Length: 121
Image (cartoon, rainbow, N blue to C red; front, side, top):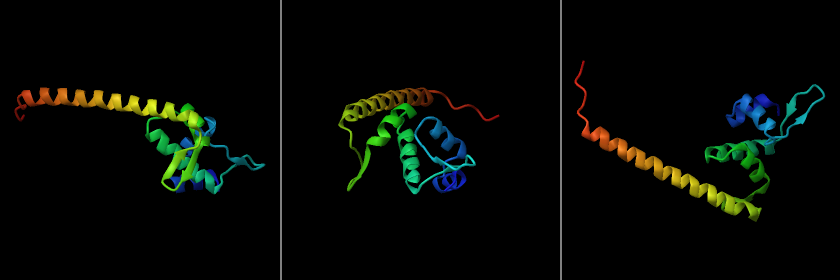
């Protein structure tokens, strides 16, 4: 399939697909005309890239993780043990940032609750 079809089917913009190629996350074949040609497996790869980006991972880390993802009965799991600790650390960092954001929301809620409502204009 060509880039436009992959974009439509995956819901990912053509620009993003080209960026993924620049970042070595996708490696489509090229026709003699220069057009990119994608395989059905690239659809799954794009979905995985999207999921990892949504999890807060950067493209450099995703580049290292993608080859280590394998489908198992319970979903997707790592097949490279050396990345496990790194992903656990990444998760723990996200949890710390979430906790900090919750504290910020709580502080803001306290300020809002203590503030008089503005009078209508």
